Length: 283
Image (tube, rainbow, N blue to C red):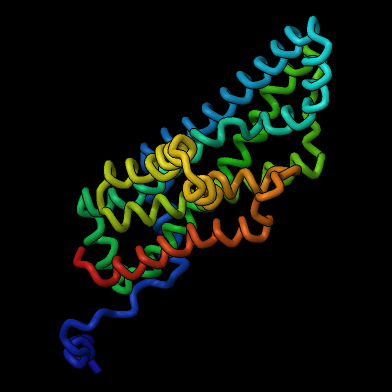
């Protein structure tokens, strides 16, 4: 049978199967690593993590020097010294999450603002494989960049702490948990950011929504009095992250498994909504 006959036998308007998922994943990775915005934002994440670690190491050293004249303050500081130094490599996580989250927003919103979405979804008519491929690429990048930046931050902070007689035990259970959970948390933020970029299809709107969720809302819930806001504060993503990595939680804090569950909800709900809306709306 000729090619023309095969084409005529296919119902009009029926999309073909499209490329395999591995091909889609590879194409999304190529697009991701060749974008200038990706290189800039990833580099900014590394600089922020390393810079905050160095600054915190210097600050702890300066405070230890000042507390030597106050025996009570010095004893209290010495008791908390190990916990303080353990968190130095990830001390810039609050700003790193916004940079990586913004990168995730741009990864999807730029498809619509530049018109690339037409080409992408013409090549992948089912749309879902392209979305999942983008999600895997950006979350894997978020995890790797966060962990790698934390390790570089450790390298930068170690000589500063040595000058003041402190060190970071990177082999301790708490340090390892903090390192890995930070990577998972930033990957979760990236998934939320990409979902916002898909739902809003606007870079500025997606980034502002991300800033509102991770910066404005937590501050507002701390300032507004009332038991409702105090209780609701526990279920915000940043509070869930703090609960997971905290060795000595408060009495009324969530269990670790509850914190993981709610963090999963924060990821699954927007991702599922984005996938549904992506298939239903026109490009």
